[in-house]
Image 1 (tube, helix red, strand yellow):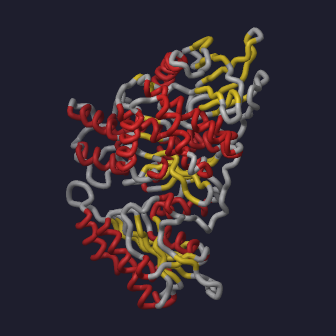
Image 2 (cartoon, rainbow, N blue to C red):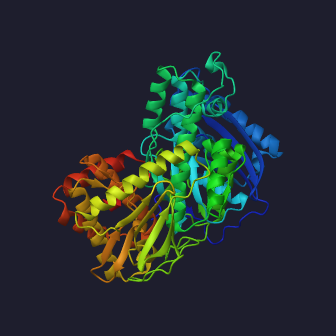
Image 3 (cartoon, rainbow, N blue to C red):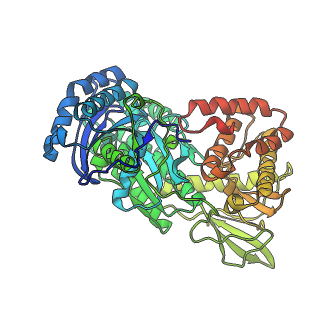
Length: 591
């Protein structure tokens, strides 16, 4: 059900030809206005609120929008060589964003709508960032949305933009701004941090030269398809207090954070079987991030897309562009329905103007899927995830797989070597630990640190993600019960998997009472912390609810298995609820 307000236009509504749309953006620090004619951008004007010190103050930003709003709209119309009486539609950012700022844009849009007797549409700000990418030719990409308040990994599935992963604490743009503020770099800090990372001079360095830039050892915090930035900022500021150069800090923060973003984006691409990625949001203007994402996509045999900077940052043209698409799909709003929504989630919008992709069988391009109990022939590629290539081999008559961590061109060598070394050792150790509590994992036969590979027993069967959407209902229910039991066993024994998705469960035997194996334990750890167990479950539900939407209503099967194996289930489920309420985009319906 679409929880955003709106109604269909009646069958007698005549869509105007040569349609002219004004879009108004006012979610945060920027007031923007843009004009689109039949999907082509003909003007895009913006003005940014720059605080004298500190970060964005919502009320002061709103006051700025009040001062400049009318002039920006006038300039956008003037640049487009049109009058407001020529408009066929006005669109505005309804959310998410800062309440006082959103209200300014909504008010101006209502005035124009009433004055000229034209329809009005309230658009989702995040969806507008994503939709503008269609101008670049992207068809079904995974979307890396990196802005001030938002950091999300998104895919379009079954008529909605689904959030596969996101920041667990702070948006990448806000983190860079806060880091900059603490180091004396004025708002917005992101562009200046980019220049400092290259060694360029800046008044904020107070004479510090950019030579001798070092890569600092900062926390690399990836949890499945989710990420965390607050620890990186804390560590970076601690180093700054010890006298480490601002150039080294900026360089290291960028390389670490952007490597994390590339990794989780690639993990999402592998999970849903996609070879395109689209960048969006203000941080997507960063040339280093664009380069890294492009390298990652090309290494997978895919392609990346990035809007030009004026369309990547907050702007009115993207709101107009989305507004026209919504209107042409039959969506319009009454005045009563134009109330702003500060927590307007990306996945709340029914995207009726796009053809809906059914997930069905999920296959990763360039990989093979086995039948239950089937062994792959040597040389068969069985997996291509964010970290490794997995191929079948014959080892003295034994069916094995080799998991080799191919060097990631987007990551610096020092970061790459540290991650590979840590994760190979950890995976070998955790596979044994998980098997010791009664969960089927592959035996490790050989570890080659120099090559960056593990040779393991082959678990004969497909990844559950490949088949789950197309199974018989009783088999789906059985699989969910078994997953719940396995997670319950892990948590009862103080083991956190760290990357719980249906791609990491192997279907060894099917039917109503399936037998599953568990793989890919490189992010696993031993921990008794209830918080980490709650995050583990959140990671699973976040991805599961996006890629297995058709199984909504079967969540009780999973919980029955979990409760059966874990006496602390109720406490951990309560922690999951608490963690979910902290976030922005995961639905509570699965809890």
